[in-house]
Amino acid sequence: MSVVLVVNSGSSSVKYELVEVDGTGPDGEGGGGRSLASGLVERIGTGGGHLRHERRDGEGDGDGGGRTERDLDVPDHGAALRAVVDAFAQHGPDLGEAGLVAVGHRVVHGGTRFSAPVLVDDDLERAVEELSDLAPLHNPANLEGIRVARRAVPDVPHVAVFDTAFHATVPPEAYTYALDRDVARRNGVRRYGFHGTSVASVVPRAAALLGRPAEDLAMVVLHLGNGASATAVLGGRSVETSMGLTPLEGLVMGTRPGDVDPGALLHLLRAGGLSVDELDHLLNRGSGLAGLAGASDVREVVRRAADGDADAELALDVVAHRVRHYLGAYAFAMGRLDAVVLTAGVGENSAEVRRRALAGLEGFGVVVDAGRNAELSREARRISPDDAPVAVLVVPTAEELQIARETLAVVGA
Image (tube, rainbow, N blue to C red; front, side, top):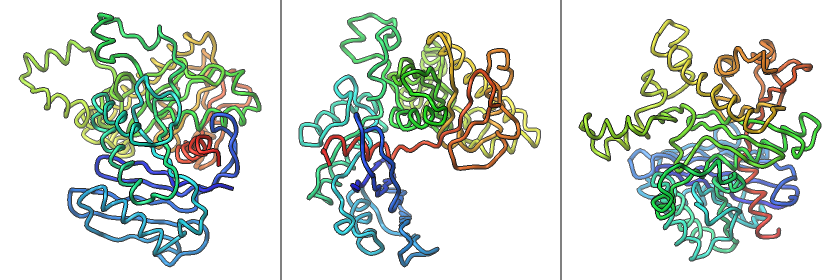
């Protein structure tokens, strides 16, 4: 057994989980694990900071057994990480006594430089900083978390695990945009893809559920959450993915639009009078479900649609249409389709979105069993009939466990 602290540092929050892994295989695969504790520090630098810490070993003195919540002042990520370390010291499990061997960090963008997890050192920090232009909303926060965590937990190695790395196997014809080649190369403009850690975590579990090796399968993984993406996985490797240079492209998301004609963006700049910063805010914060229906939470949009809200109804139809668009494209790109795998918050929990997204595909072998789809479960499961030509699976994402596995593969623990 090896214990890893997984840190996911965002612009205004730090999510963390202490994971015990019982072994790893090649490339960080294999091995089960369990969460010893997890938590969240939110509203960093905005006032009204809050920490939630929960231990899962049956002990602890917090509310609800192992849960502790409190308001605190967190003016920056340094204060947030110190609060995390203090939470482990005060409420457990003690990081020293737990046998902590490494800290794994989620980093969103690795560009073309990182196709595998990497041990953190000063050179790595500089590289992540240089890649911040490709992910200005994510990499700076990821980097700050790395820097602060190295100071807060200095006695174990730290590893960066990149969201883009799983998509390093996408072939050139799929990642290349038809722009002037010199301009594109000079500015690093190509498809990189994201949610790779999530996809990597569900592929072997989906294969196990089907009783077949991942190397024999063609599947489309639909990571549906506030951020959403589709990935074509052939033989266990990513060969197509919907997010591009940034996490803006592809499926409709909570606040991001997915695919938009670039000419429409030029039109908004020239004729619409938007500044570059205003357009950036529109694309990252004011579009998607929020722009179409006035709410970014799919549960609220589903509720409004059920109450007859036409905007909410249209928003869900747009979401479903875009999913089917990518599902069909990727099935043809791979030449066959053995499974559709739904994961992340919406994919795992919204029976209505699953129903809408996969409706009308019976002629292509994609069938959703209404009873199975409606069942509430946190387990990996099949929601298609047993004899359906294409298996439709719901597999909970396990990003933290995947990061822990890949971290251990680097440090050799």
